[in-house]
Image (cartoon, rainbow, N blue to C red; front, side):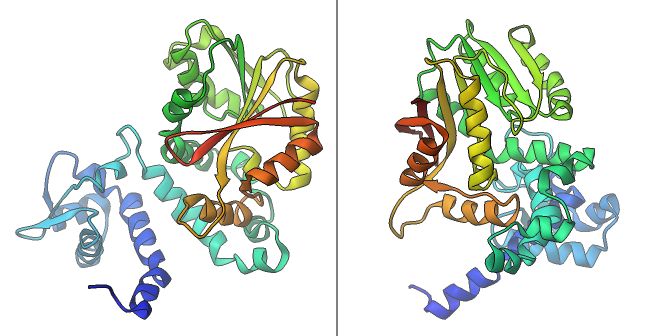
Length: 334
């Protein structure tokens, strides 16, 4: 039986109760403490320096939505939904929960600034843009890198399955972060060479991951600033979840710098969610709000990408959908 609309709306209004409860469990490390099996709440509380009654109430609430499960004797155990809250598993969501609770949630609380001005609530709150803020805080930058891998990591295989990279001799990942995306492409295409392009301190963090992936010998690590210039010499330039971070003027600066770096036969590959028309559910519509509120950017429709590409000197040749919400927006120099 369907709930009355006021009840459904109430659940949406208080949705942050759930997200912040997940954050608390992540910061307390509960999922890691349960990796070996069920444990009594008193034991968990002692291990994470929490009040036993407060922790019980938190885990009871989370168990009601499938994150953890309570069994006899006030013991709790992992569930499939709780498993990714472990910090030591593939596709871990631990860092994403931490980042959302500590950096993103306060910015959303200041979101009326974005509604009034169209500008970043995060910048207004902290006095500096997100990436400048992270540059000053290495530990938060590490959590950010892990969060991005957690939320977007599953997209890598989907992109490599949907778009044919064969024939690309040198692939440049611009703003490639920790290098995990480029490393996966190089592993899929053994003859391909790579170029990881990002700020010097980001590239320095990425070296260990690229080396661990066994592709450092085929990958140049290039420190730089894509607002100033982009290294030439690649057959294709990927911008994965980069263009959506910036406003129109900033995006044009980035893409025009890429245009200068590219040869006449190079390709531009922007990997983002492309907002579809209509009222259907699409996570990218809320991601668009997050981009406005936090870094000050936006998600775009196909028509908006075509306008952006044209203004930067590109022709949008095709949009290749993948099995997840992102698409590959391909362009060539006009």
